[in-house]
Length: 338
Image (cartoon, rainbow, N blue to C red; front, top):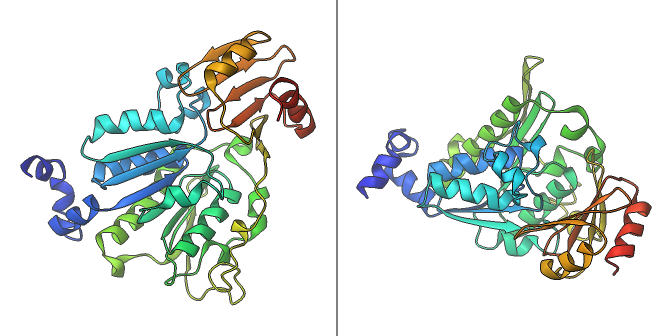
C-alpha cells in the first residue's frame, strides 16, 4: 500500500478525493469509446488517476495525421499500423501497471455496445461523430449508466456529464441533425482544445466516481479558445417530448445498422463484411492481385485500380481513396464479395 500511496499521494492530498476517494476510484470501471484525440487524453488521465479498469474501444489504426493531437501515439505506431486501442494500451501499461486495461478493436454498434458496457460504471465519449454519440446516449440511458460527452473541432469544444434519472440527456440539447456539421477532417482542430475538453470530461467523471455528487457542474459547457469566449448552459428540465430520457423510445437503438459508411473527410468508405475475416487467408488471396502489408491486427492492400483496402479480423473493410459508395461496393464485391 505504501507504493500506491506514493503514486497517488498528490491526488490523495486533494481533500475532495483523499484516501477514501482513491479507494473508490480503484474499484471503478470505465469505458472509453474512441481512442483518438479525446480518447487518448481521457485514457491518460484516468489511468494515471488509478481507475481500476479502463476499457478502450476503437475501430481505427494509427496514421501520421493523428500525431499532432493524439497524445499516446508515436511514429513507430504509424509504421507498425497498430490499431489505436492496442497502441494506447501498450503506452498506458507502461504508465500504470496497477490499472487493468482492456483494448477492444471493434466498430461500436448496436450489436457490440451492450457487451462493451457490461460491468461499466461510466462511459466516456472519445468519438468524432454524432451518430455514435446518440447511440452511446441512448444505450446509457436505457441501461442507467452515466455518459460523459465531449466534442472538439477547430478551436471550439463542448462537454457535459449526463446521468440517467438525474439530468436531461444529450438529445435534449443537441438535435439529431447535428452530425452533418463541421469536423476535424474538414476544418481542422488545434490540440489544446482537445486537451481541455477531455480534461473537463475527466474532472466530472472523477467527481462522480469518488461520490462527490454535490460538486458536479450540471451544465453543458461550450467554449472557443481562439475566440476567447465560453458559455455554460444549465441542465434544468429535460424536453417533455425527448424520445430518450422522457419517452424512453431510444431511437438510436431501433435504427437499422448501416453496412456501408462514408468516413467524413477521409476519402474512405467502411463496409461490414458480415462475418469475421481470417487475415492470413485474405493476405494470401489479395497478395495475388495487389501489394499487401500484413500486421497481427490488419491487412493493407494497394489495389491496381488505385484504391486501398484495410481489412480487420472483425469483418470491417475500409476502402480508401474514394467516398463514392457505388465505387467502394464495386471494389468490395470484386475482391471480397459477400
